[in-house]
Image 1 (cartoon, rainbow, N blue to C red):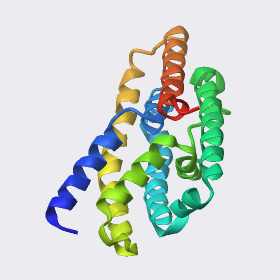
Image 2 (image 1 turned 135 degrees about the vertical axis):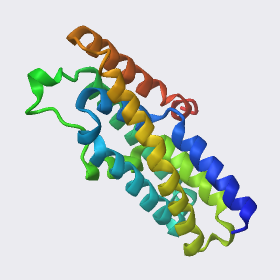
Image 3 (image 1 turned 45 degrees about the vertical axis):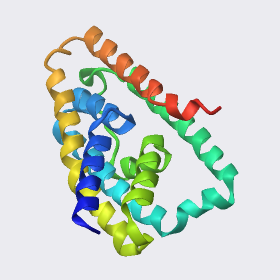
Length: 198
């Protein structure tokens, strides 16, 4: 991989990781509702899960979409349903004082698995692999994954910290409910690019 391609990949990884999407909106809500420390497994699950997704998609899973186009439609339907469920969970999240025993952010495994039904993650992975993995070798896929891993974690950390800082304003039940409902609505709106072709 040349320096030009690598630098372009770093910029692409930063912009795509830092802009609003399902992961970032969920982390902001998690930071506001559970704090930074309790959201760390969620953050690590996103970074590790997405890096693994890049390698596995590059290694051959993307060919399934080419050979079985219906599988892409099935993935979109599952993604929409799961994101709608997560939006509902965010919108109905109870304040910590009342539900601290039950309420919890996504675990590492849940956040890693979520990447497979995250439309933005699929778009990022397929674009990165087709544009920035010359030769389509396992080494190139691993390098793309490593770049995303290095760039992604600081980006998603910002969103979690932003949510945690917003918790200072969300000091009563009504404000927290409004914030959670806005985050849920934004999560649903993030599905617009996926729903357009339907």
